[in-house]
Image 1 (cartoon, rainbow, N blue to C red):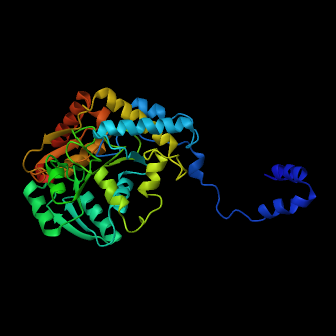
Image 2: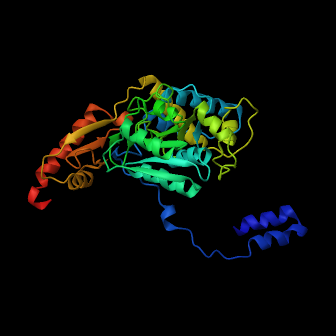
Image 3: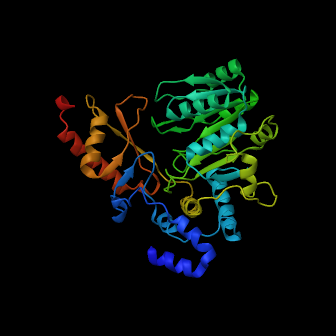
Length: 382
């Protein structure tokens, strides 16, 4: 360090020496962390959780490529290809289709910050963690939030939704397509059309389902659809996918107030992603490497023709607690799995086999691990 300072003094001359001395005049109060002197060590695990999931080899390779400028023509080309991939994955022709620099939570906030204003009526399907999260964001915005509460593992019928639409006259309905905290899947056919008859927009969370369960945004009348990168797409966490219909755009264009967040202002994001046919202006620095990976994961989805299997259900004999069995499997077999409280409330263990992990070999591996867990977990000790 002192040799470097001496060279700096010689290069800068006497008038600048005082500045160099000032920069180095304070002692370091925090010593270098010893942990950072050691090589990074990450265990090799089979991830069968709702997310993150193991990365596909092609996606892993993309993450090792060199970064380029986030506003270069080459990066804009990557972004344009990502938009096309999202349109394919969502089955939508919406021009306002883009990736958000953040996880699925960020995409949810992009949707709600732009669609809702204080005082708007907001109907929320609350049958798990993500409905609760949407409810909380709506309350923070100042919307009049009306939860449709269901026990974990339940879903909403068209009749139940229509009752809520008639009673509360919301401008927006939120539903979770695949509630990762319970494993339940919400039907979507007919719900968009029902909402539109009541002058309501439909917002759907498909973070845990995209690529594993069919979804048809335009045909199902979904106005805003968002997903995440780290689940069936086998991409690193940190980017999310979102698309807005023309009806949703009209609601945003008619806002009386600006969205609370500059980072999540859809008009700025749409311009930056080339969705408005105007010259792109700087908005924020995108996660360039993350976008490489997202591009490759969408390319794999195109090659698989939206036919990636995602979930298997394994029956657990009566009298056993699946939580103890999951704990045993994770501790003894280097497999991370998760269980969902399905309609049978704990009698079925739902294991997320995400994207490239959805192989017969991995299914057999998990079933064998469960068999061994049952042999080592007597009922009287559970």
